[in-house]
Image (cartoon, rainbow, N blue to C red; front, side, top):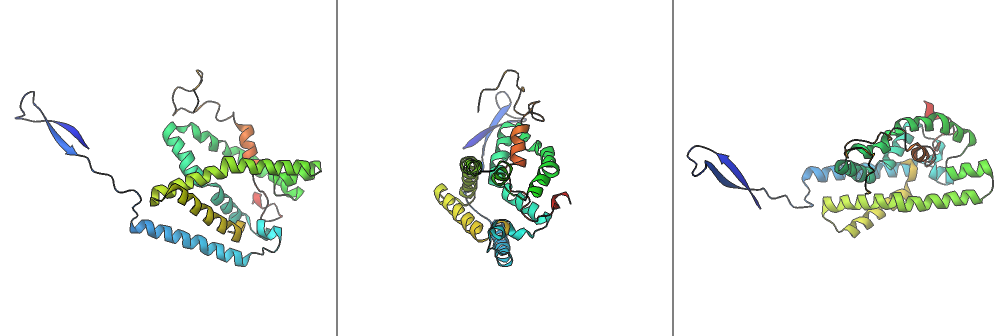
Length: 256
């Protein structure tokens, strides 16, 4: 494929405009990895596997608390690192960033609200969770209202929502990245991602478009004026009730 480049110059015939055909450089082959790319991947996997093996040997996994809560012996900084590493994944790198690149800054409102809602989590909700001795919302609801039905209902609802709105999105976006980077089949990438995730989770766990409204913003790059105050209910649930809290130490470490 070529482009026509118009050039002005003395001695050009006719109207003084001559055209020259400049070949467009062909894109590189999809899935080609350089030595630096391979080195980064190898170092990453060696580091992750090393941390996982070290943590699995070090942590006591003979009890439920030891498996899911790392024995309640972790300080605040590895808990924060664990939350960030498990929360910021392909769904954000590909989904959120890609949506922002395609449609503008408005999608960033989902994360902008976290700036003060996470403060509400740390100073209002987490002290209640720690005082109650709970780490999940179903566990808190059972202790607060009693009975098994509300706990089972919340657990089943959370599992369904996670599978269809979060896990499936992360699997697809992660497999899409593997397909683009390595040139693999999408289904092979999906199975590979599932196997690696399952092995790492089982052995290590924690110790490691619609038509716009007329009154809407004029362009996609202009965030809605309702972004700073509109989705508080949704984001309050996401950041304060849709997590496992206080799972490292029974002490109120989040304030320090």
